[in-house]
Length: 250
Ligand SMILES: Nc1ncnc2c1ncn2[C@@H]1O[C@H](COP(=O)(O)OP(=O)(O)OP(=O)(O)O)[C@@H](O)[C@H]1O
Image (cartoon, rainbow, N blue to C red):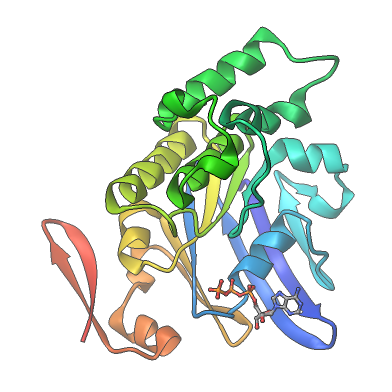
């Protein structure tokens, strides 16, 4: 297991948001975190990246207690893409280069620049390298922050709604790149998604959050009409279309 979460609890002030959260992720796996607006998905990702400190519970990253790692180790090993992005007057190249910062010792190496070039190419951003972030569209910016997380070469990618600003082609491309990176580099990705069909297409494992806790966690077998209706309050059909399961609201 690359990540084991056991009994995590978190409150904003006296308001409990996460209770007894338990799940694990293996190398080579993409886990989709699913649930209603306000269910606590982003809060959970922030606990996993140590932006927030759980009140209780343990998070093990490759058998090491996350709370005992240095900030540098956290930055080297966990790549986090937030739901909202700050726009700075950086070029795309420099913004992606920032992903290498946790790995830089004395100065940038040729290898760091090469990683950035490769990632820009992978995401189809080569022609944007010298453009400024505040001159990009929402979708272009989203690809840049994903590129930065890729350049970081983390052990676990934590992506909060990475496709929310992307058109259909880019949604499929970006999630396919995440999936390939996870398989090829034997890392893991934990992705918050609202689109159940994208989740079914790209994730290996699914975690439903409901009433502050894990309602269900497992493989495709948990993506049943009963579970989806219970979590989202919407009756649905789950049918196979050319071998791909598709969720259709009724
Ligand atoms: N900084 C904060 N202070 C207090 N409450 C917060 C804070 N951030 C989030 N919350 C509350 O915690 C709950 C969970 O929020 P969170 O953003 O984790 O939900 P989410 O499942 O990611 O939602 P969405 O799907 O809408 O993005 C919500 O009720 C939200 O209002």
